[in-house]
Length: 215
Image (cartoon, rainbow, N blue to C red; front, top):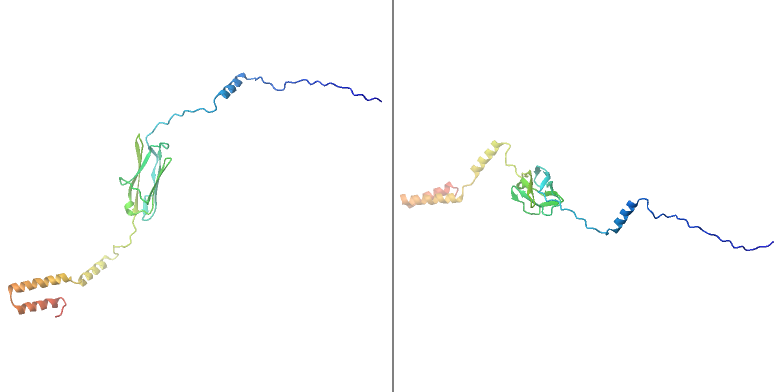
């Protein structure tokens, strides 16, 4: 048996598996035009027209409170993105001064006023005023604060109270300045009309006895 090596030649034929031709030439042109554009383009956005303020939600809050409670008023105003919009608060027509008890909020159209530890003098009308270069708008809210009565002055039995007052009037001591004044007037009259020393002394003794003094 004879073994021989026989060279064998193999030929591979190339096959076109990728097709570079597009079936939609108009779409291919659009892709190429998009690729040729710059990566970053400046987009021009038109500024929104400036509008006058208006309240989309009027002020709301409690209307009856007791002394020492907290007040919270809130509402909503437009335009929201107006950097020139200014908010002011008024109490009974006077500009509300900043203080530790008063806290105001203005955030993206939300307006609020908080008052801690209210007093009866805080009662009245509160006004929120929104103003910009175009115009202004106001919203109002009124509440009342009832004070804490420490002493009750009205009597359930007025007739008994009247008797107590009468007893107090009768028991009230006579002021010393009135006694001295009566004594002085009496002395002057005796010296002017009588001119008698004995009568003058007797009168003085009598005046002192009438007022509870002993000599």
